[in-house]
Image (cartoon, rainbow over all chains, first blue to last red; front, side):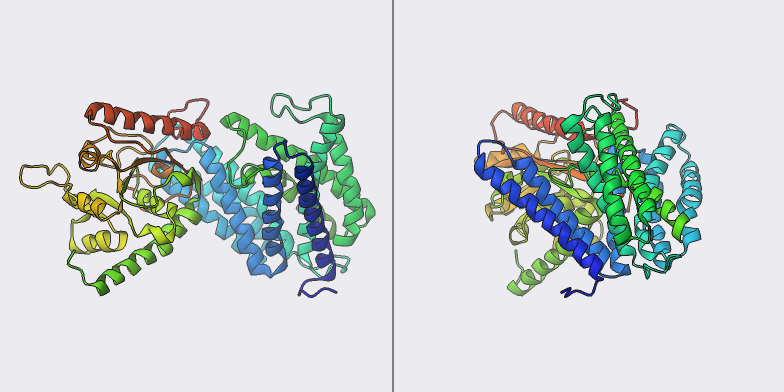
Length: 315
Length: 231
């Protein structure tokens, strides 16, 4: 049945994702045909972009480790670039900014090498200490703290956090021995649950949301949306966990709840950043969605937190 | 031009290799481009594209806006004193990048520094001009020079298309050698027509650029108004 050199579980999981997209595209085509007077452009763009995201994602998890790390490293690069384009930077920091970019290939190299100890300290210890030193050597102290901390925050979210998703791919065999090291399924679990959670929170919020969760940061986020989304994600985690990961039912449900809650947090934290910078979208790389950070915001929280949850219990 | 057909073919191949091998990866991958109103670009000459100038990346960026089949017709006018400093640079600038050298401040009774630009327009090229004359301060516009008006006087009917590029001065300002990756916004404006009244013409062009700049800056505007905020 499965003509590709990937595991059967991954193959069927990808089939399901493609089926969901076909369904979404079909629904929009039907809606556009029935109600031609309404403007479907944004929704149509959004779904078309989803196709692209899924295509890149499939490439990222199903070929081999090298391709995975190059693709995911490039995603970090795009996210970091988008972040730096938004934040104010000092002209004096031309070279430190280039050094900060250099941290991306190095971080993904540790992952390729499977050197966990270095992967986990390289950015928070070496990069975070090196960059301010490099900046102070230039001698411009006006706005120093602000420049150093914006750079740190960008590396933290777009490189360090997101690279945990990539490290899932190189985890060794887990303690139960059931997984045979198939990290692609772990990434799939994390990303599907995170993105599903975004959609579920949006839909629950639209359907029953009243009380605003954090009106000052994000006027569209409601308490009901958050709770409904998190519970739905818990349920999906409960179903998918035993299939895709070494986790049993209880741990899977906990993982779903963890992703549901921290995904919300990642989303609103990035909203806080955008609000501070006075922009609505982080960029326009993904038509219908906004920037790449608008899509990855939840993952900046769920990736490291799910990774360490799983690693503590099973690796 | 006294070039034989073979050498012209060779130089065209060089320019294409430069555009595909350098301009595309640097601008489209390393930097990343958001282009608004591509349809307003003049694909057929004679036409003039006027752009703001903050970085050596400007011309690479402009090249990536055009389809490969048309890009060889696009040629920037650039300062002879800078690009013809020595033979190697002169060869690289005129043959690989494809600039039209113009002597800055060289107007006199005998020679018109714009002569090669007239020739290019007459040959149906798309001429790129940087009316600020120099790269200047990053992300800030300098006063516009008059060369464009003189060109327009000779060819009053051809379209003059303003293009504003935001973020390139930040990526690689004067003095920097490696571009820092930043997303770049490029906005193509509606064509402008030449007019006899020189101050009015310059004022209109200036107003076009100011409006484009304001549009582009909305994204990068820092609400706190810190002195180092990009503009």
